[in-house]
Length: 274
DNA sequence: AAGCACGTCAACCGCCTGGAT
DNA sequence: AATCCAGGCGGTTGACGTGCT
Image 1 (cartoon, rainbow, N blue to C red):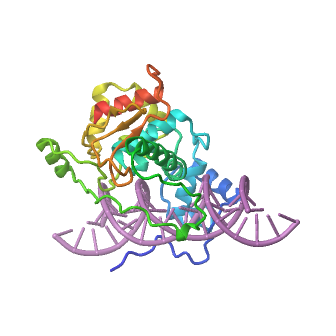
Image 2 (image 1 turned 90 degrees about the vertical axis):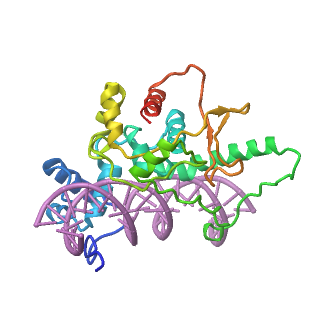
Image 3 (image 1 turned 180 degrees about the horizontal axis):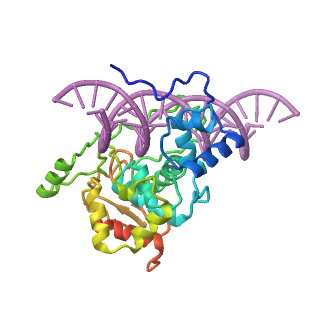
């Protein structure tokens, strides 16, 4: 038996939200709180799918959401966390107060991926300067006609026990582990405010933080990924040829020696917990 | 000025998980 | 144990804006 759709979709509005709809949704949630997304549209007088309401609230209307202007420090942290976690956007977003998984995902796909590719390309050129000269042509092709992306790395689905096994055996992998999506624990719950999350994370005791981390079944192996090359790029233990194929390449986009800031602290604490 | 190509990002889709029954 | 439900997540789409020819 297939799953029933979350809503009938018949007669429901789709597409961009109007300011009136935003107001209705915000007012309703301020009065009644989050949750009950399926019944929320009806109760709030919205002709929207419950999922759509939740998404709109989570990614746009929720208080404390920062929009745009992702700083270089934030980019740096996103890149580093992505190297650890892979496409676990919700977890990455949980480490960036006020940022949503959707925004980070978009930013990664539209900005950082290109930036990383550029860095990787330069790095590859520096190591293969005796080989072919590749001309970078401006891509004029439409998206749909673009060359297919390189084959994704084999999906590594790691259960808790698998992860423990790998830890115990000391087995490493060449690529960021991409554990199956899991429901984020209460500590990382998206229903918590980002501010409180950040506050808890950066100020909590190490024990509390460790306990929090223990709840998250995000296993991350620890490859030798912090080998800083002369070009300012960290190379990990992955295949040397392709970042997208799973090899680690961890450029320090805005790294300054001794530049200790909040995001760095967050990252350091995250590393310790892992 | 017009048409086209490309970039951005809000929104949608389908699948998955945990909890309830 | 099996099934259903609600919510969460990541991948993808498509409308819109912008720059180029």
